[in-house]
Length: 463
Ligand SMILES: Nc1ncnc2c1ncn2[C@@H]1O[C@H](COP(=O)(O)OP(=O)(O)OP(=O)(O)O)[C@@H](O)[C@H]1O
Image (cartoon, rainbow, N blue to C red; front, side, top):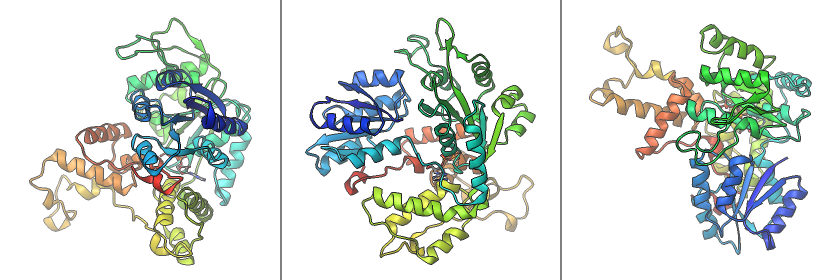
């Protein structure tokens, strides 16, 4: 069920949008203005916010961002012209919905907000086996640990488990444990009371409370600090959490799914991950194979995205030409499904003619490990054995070379932070902190594919 917040008056066309959304199964809340909308978003989880352009969309997006409330905002307005759509997108809205509303468009938005409802697309027997196992465990209450390389579809599988569980009508809440520094992650997980720390201007429910009655996905759990691991363990064992600054424990009824692209058993052996928590999470383990190890999935997933991005960009649906299919099948997909999705998205936009030809399928050949490529060995070999290009770096500041290497690697990984951190051999948290610094200094930082605006109308892609 999609949890929708509408900011604006429900009289006239916006009320019509609200009726369409509820008839499609959305749970609706309404706020008269941005301030009350943000207050609601702080305490309740929403999958989507629809905001009338009569209100300050830009302030809404900036406030959500500042409070780290992750929720897509769709702006909507009457008598919409291209300029109104452009302004909304520039203000940070994900899409623009012209009023009066189109029922199909609202249905598509609701579906996109909760992700792939039909579950992972697959044809390969290796993936079919994983899904069969997932369905088998979905109805149990046990924790599930989903592992697999970055971009293989761990979150998609977690949603699939939730939608096949007894909790399907409850909320599905996901949190990326690598995205935040420890102190923020703690308040994000467990919530806080007003005044619990400087900056806690209002009380806020954490993800555990937001997921009450449903499922909480702890993504990239391998990155979590040991002190927080202990708190997660307590939440799992006692079924209660402590808000920061709270007077007493709060009961929560949450099923935990965890995902990681690390080898958690090895992390336990290395003393970086608590063994007791590992056993608690690893009651059922599901490993998603890399895309190169399930080649029969490549074309069905590519067709799916070709259709989806053609629709989203107002283009006709075209099939892949035989040479394009061969190119897709011949690639090793180091970025897995995320890379395939991005490649197909680009191919749909680049293709000319009645089919998507091989020339529109731009594939990135994996680079050698950055550490091998950029740095000379300690016991330097004779000049000729050095990686090419290193001599050209002499005279540059270490800091600048590091920044260029990080941004170049991220571009190579199509904006995928997890993959870039893997290649660079640094933690995702370090990578994110560095990107934050670079962005603050005005450097252009590549955007992750999942964050690329997908425009339902040709003009909404501007901004
Ligand atoms: N089988 C699939 N069918 C359709 N879409 C898929 C499938 N697997 C993955 N995707 C899409 O690929 C992208 C990456 O998937 P997802 O975020 O679930 O991967 P992940 O393994 O959790 O990545 P990370 O480790 O980087 O967090 C998403 O846009 C998702 O919708």
